[in-house]
Length: 471
Image (cartoon, rainbow, N blue to C red; front, side, top):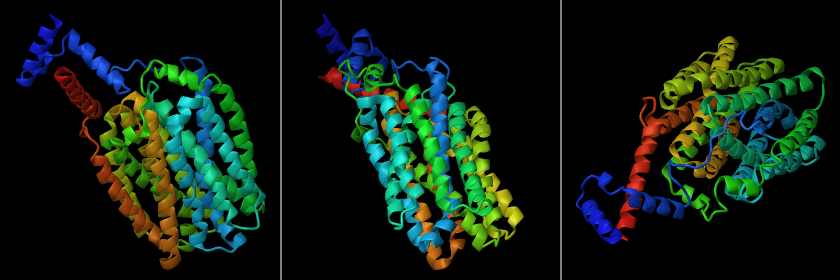
């Protein structure tokens, strides 16, 4: 009887009639088996969506990951304020000191390749431990200010590794909670708070307190030690066994590999977008003080204030616009923000006024703020839950390469042409990432991302069902 029904369904399928005639109870079973064999369950995910305060342990976990992002923001922003003092201390040029932006990519890339395996093996507890420990391994040599500059880039590899592990892991975790736009806005707002505080504190320590640049890293060591304790306490129960159970990996379900994720276009598209975005963000944050000193002829104090204004705008934008972006749709909102950024960058470049420069810097930070969280939301909406850690890890790593490559390129060009090259480089990258963003499927209307995923899911299910019915 079952054989006859299956043969009839097969004939109906191959005669190209409505597919709904095939997906009966037996077809659903075949589809479920096939999806299980592939390591996923399509949109019918059994992974329960949590909120920031349910279960209760998520409250302290959310506090912990926000502390991590404050430290990561301080890590990325402090170099811009300290480079004018590191250069004469070691008697190095723009190109050499720019290596401090480049080498963290090695750590980020390693984190991207290992993140999924670490989750499966030692869970989020291991991610929390390794991230904090790697940052400590990077900050201790910086604080000890070795006589050779070459040790500093080597130390920054470890900070890149720690940041890469936590960046993808905590973005994936928060991205799967309820109210993801708002929570990711707060999370990346914490990064912006760190980015705002670091240049301000560094400038005060160096210009007002007359301390050497390396004293700033004693503060980073203290914060990372606190983060290590808080992170371990909050994620102590999030072991590898708990992660495997939650994702049904102990029930014979094959985990999604990084290689499988790399075969899909969305991770690559969003990786390219984040490469450009993070590159612009860190490039502006890193070279604004030098631009203010060399081109606008501002004082050292005002140069530090300028970069603080940039990160402050970024922080406010992530929090405030995070509540707007989801309501009008990620695609449309980010397209508008990028258009405004291009206009502001033209003003920043063309008008040689310190007041106009400060206003543009603040607004650039404000409208740049929501871009990274929106990219994470896009990936969580377009990709199945079991692919989030690997895909976000890859995108964060390649985005991290933007933080390394673009500031380095500006440093090399600045050595030859002057730091004025910052503005045309940033403007060109803005145009490129706008084109990439418009290439994301789903159109500009709200709900388009969900419709694009549903269409892709339906197409995948029909292909799987056709294969099983034919077999």
